[in-house]
Amino acid sequence: MKDYEINDETLAIIPDDIWNSIVVEDNCDYEVSRKPIDIVDYSCKYFGSSYDGRKVGSKDVLNSSYKLPIVVEDTRNLVFFPTTSPLDEDCSWISLKNIKEYRRIDDLNTEVEFKNGKIITVGISYNSFNNQVLRASRLESILRNRREKAEKTN
Image 1 (cartoon, rainbow, N blue to C red):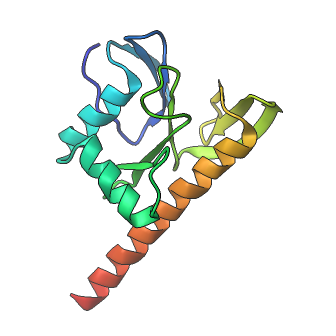
Image 2: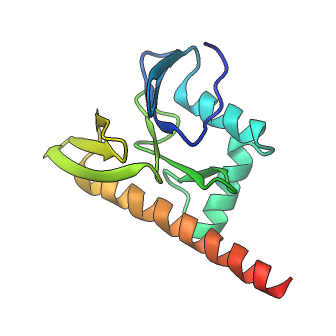
């Protein structure tokens, strides 16, 4: 599969090798012939923006510039965050809304359990993963509050 749009069932996008990714969904996994960052960019474009545009928006909202979470599509609350710098070959992307819980495995790895019971291990420390969850949650919360405020004034 070459093209893939992130959707409600997308749990994670994990690099398989330098050119391919494994997309983890609720009921199956797909091998996609694109890097994780390219899948995120393609999905942002599919929904009318781009990774760079979404990154600028996240940067302004969070007043931050490193490992930014991205709103791939806002009406369905598709917020994803990277586990490392998005340009790193080993960067995975995780769906915020599908996380049930996460646990420390060791100093360098975290186990993520999704709402459907699927479990993956990502190469990121528990503290860094927790920080990414908090940043993504903050982004989602600020944008939701802005939408609600705008709806009240209209």
